[in-house]
Image (cartoon, rainbow, N blue to C red; front, side, top):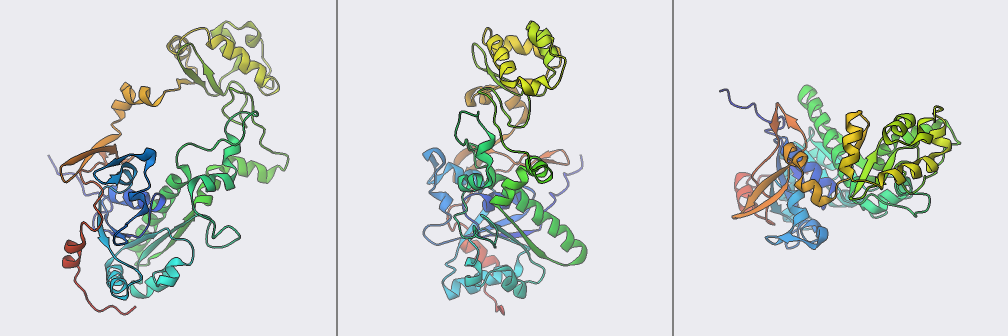
Length: 389
């Protein structure tokens, strides 16, 4: 049996100066693809993510969320305000392939580790900068935090019903999408560098990630000024899709319906009035009324009862699972989205990289590093040399 081919980014050295979520997760995505990632942290405190705990949970001295964002990395400590530490970091920069940072605009310039300064040390460097709202404009100095970026982007007005206030997405969607864009930009620039020898700068922000997420809405609005957000009734799941698109209570849970023909649903569910709705415009004009008729019928039996009927007819539907139901489901087990990593004998369950390469699931056994865990090893491997900076 032939050995598995190397992962795509094996041999690439990444310096991760970022903190908390978007930058660290982008670096982790590169690590999952084979890159060597050295996390550069402040002495004594390290990445703020070590103490900012999701749900208040910790394992082995660090937050569970830190473990989830920083597997497969090494850690060194450096005080970037110290001339000696900064000089050593610049030597690492000279050897690196990629830098990732997510400080506010101006911070890396003051330190002397902005792209233009770094390029004089390492002309072929691939430099990734993640910010909250870009480096220009009136919002550039606002705190780059997920909920705040969601709110500025208008996203919370797209969920919920017309009776609700703004409903933010309940996970850090701006950070996670930004991590994907940064990782994509880095890999694209690495391809160019391998082809031409030229490095480059990739920049993106939480706000741009949120605006890109809304590409359908924004594109439609740019071409039709009459478009505005008008959320539907209590069962509607989309401000710009007609009935039956939404979620409906059953006797033991909830059922989600996507785009489906109203007459077909009427026939399958025994709702004569819906069966006679032959004009597609009625799905818009009578949206709330249609949803209420469906809700009344679905409330009479279990989720599985309705799935048995609708799945047989190839209706686009799904159960709305709780967290416990998801974790206990055969479908969750089948996709093998979890893994265990280990640190000093402590085993930690977490997720894995979501893509496969050459049929290979991107998993690893290396947990997130302790603060400064690799100081001695890295300084031995990369001893001090003179660097003109």
